[in-house]
Image (cartoon, rainbow, N blue to C red; front, side, top):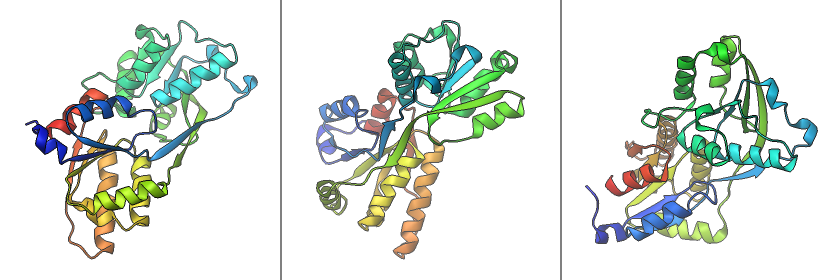
Length: 275
């Protein structure tokens, strides 16, 4: 059931997605009466590639993108070096949000492979299921566009099926340290009795946030918080950090409320305003 306006005013939501990804959701939540803090957990930086370092896309049957940000950076690189996306090339997207970015940048919807909108998870496993439906024999050579590091699961499945897989790192991610003003505000907020919900959308974000919480000895306050994540693996990472924090502080273990939703603003807003 949706909380009423006065209850919303007493609830604080912390958005930890990278800078530039929170504005629309923040506006929706503020209009609904929530107090919102934007606290990016990760900083992302495009890598610089020379023209000769860009792969020959015509040599691939599929280019898989791990995120919408990977799509944006890659297409900026293509434009910078006066290259274009081949009309017949298949693009793979880890989820619907990434597929939407590909469409906005001109890739035909008929050439984008992605998990169904109602798939339980928007991840590599769901994408691989879609690929199997089409037939792996159509994709003998695959390029994975990602950050400097990442999960290997999809590449391992493809290579086991005798598919050649190459990686193209186009950005790097770094944990973000809180500014002095942010740390002061977070200490005050977490030590208050306000109900708090966190949005965390990657395991790297979880690690970064809990590094800062540990730095300021704030983990124990999170045992009463609500968390919203976009994949079960992210929720498991939160539980591991909270378990460690409770052990360090000699506090009883507590299974906090962790809800899972799709990574779209609409799904996040609905879950935050009804949970």
